Image 1: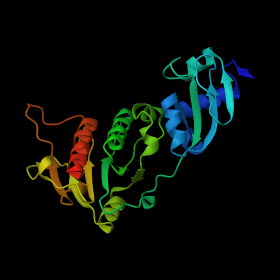
Image 2: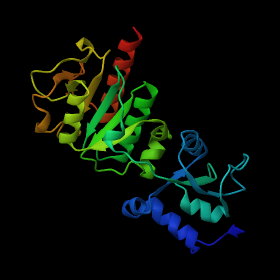
Image 3: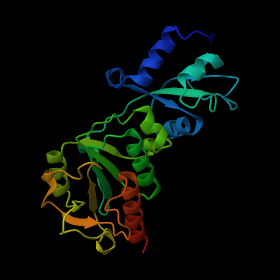
Image 4: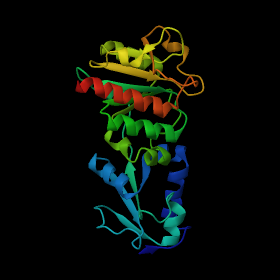
Length: 255
């Protein structure tokens, strides 16, 4: 049956999942738009609930699973990217508890504290995945990892990454217990050049918010580092800073 009305109960529920973080968390499912993103969600083992497909737009074989066909009018109202893809999937969320992470002898992790912008988190996920970071850990999380904007800006990299959340206190205990070298990015005179630090072993690099940087909790708890810059500006966009640092970590490990 073709769904042609925005008042259809399934469409109303899907719309709420897309727009309402609390409802999404309570339901234990999330929404994925786009071919590549859905392919990655399936590839990395996320449990499929159902698909909503606009047959006149989606030009590939239908994926396995429960499928609802929707009209172009309905799909255009649901999809952020309009008529560009033709597929929206609904999947079960996965746990993101830090105690589930089992680091190896040279694991590299990126930690972001209180990140507020879904687009930034998505871009950070993309860099972490691209440069082989073992895990991304978010402390004092203010964003739902399954926010559609996170998924979209990460181009589905969320699904192939180890992503965890914790408090600062829990994280610090975890890093100490697992013998991580801790590197902070506090804006003070103790900071040394990123390229002079050793990231070849088990390392954790922490970033704070663009507005205020790392919180005072991390003062004195790690080796302070910075990205050297030649211009007059004293800071970078958070996702850019993470990308540069992730590349340096990979560069050292490839030597």
